[in-house]
Length: 111
Figure 1 (cartoon, helix red, strand yellow):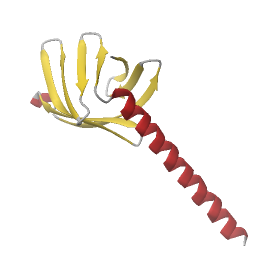
Figure 2 (figure 1 turned 60 degrees about the vertical axis):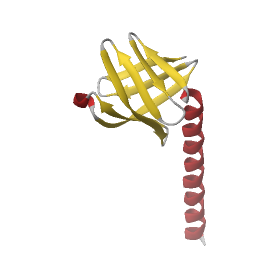
Figure 3 (figure 1 turned 120 degrees about the vertical axis):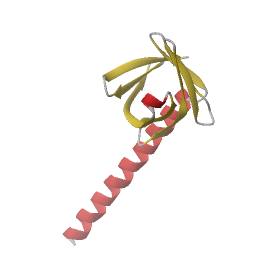
């Protein structure tokens, strides 16, 4: 019986974790969908349909975005030198989304 109880507790904990992660994912999606995020001279439009367009200096970006497991995932298609997919740990609060990419965390204002 003790083994069954332990398995039931672990299963309940895993289910709760999955629900919390799903809630966090949905919260992030709602906060940024259809909005523009801005950091310094960079502006990225995150369309509700999952498309992404923007500029950073003179460079134009195109691609797609989504949120998975509480992480911001973006797939850049243009420019080719930045092409690829990266899922970035995300923190959200106070009208700011903080994304941790290859160069460390960066704060983006949600407009």
